Length: 189
Image (cartoon, rainbow, N blue to C red; front, side, top):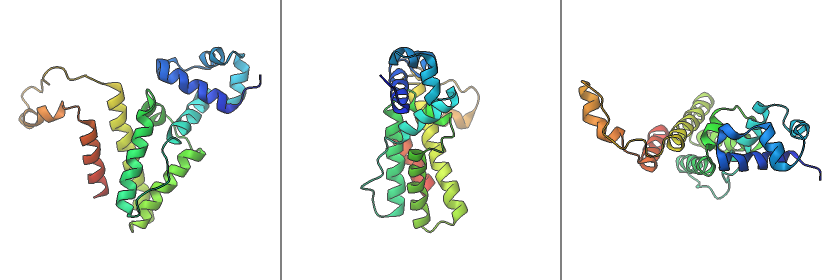
C-alpha cells in the first residue's frame, strides 16, 4: 500500500504520544508503517523536516473559527487554543519549540494572531513582536508543564536570597492554568 506524507506524520505523532519525542525517528516510523526507511525519507527528507511537519500538524489542531470579535479577547483565545493543541500531544511544546515551521497551519495561526494585534491598533512591528512574545510565552510555559509534572514535591531551597524566600511558595506552585492566564493578560495589557 502506498504511504503519503500524511501517513508519515500521523505515525510520527503516534510514536510521539506513545513514547515521547526522543523515540521519534525515521526508523521507528518505517517500522510502525511497515515500510522501508526510504519510503519515509521520500516524504520527510530529514529529521528536521519531519519535526517541521509534526509541529505544523500540532499547531493545526488549534481551531481558528468562532473567535471573539474584540482583538484582545481574540488574541487571548488564540493563545488558549494554541496551548491546548500543544498539551494534546506528549512533548507537543518541545516539538513545536524546536522548529521553525513556515507551514500552512502554522502560518494560518500566525495570520490570525497578527490580525488580532493589528485590529487592536498596534503598529506592524509591535504586532509582530507581540505575536512572537505571546507564542514564546505559551511555548515556554507549556514546555515546562509537559516536562516537569510533579517536580516540586518538597520546599525550594533558595538559600540566603530574601526576595526569593518571600516568593518561594509561589514559585513552586504548579498552577499552570493560572500562570498562563496571568501571563497572557500581562502580555496583552
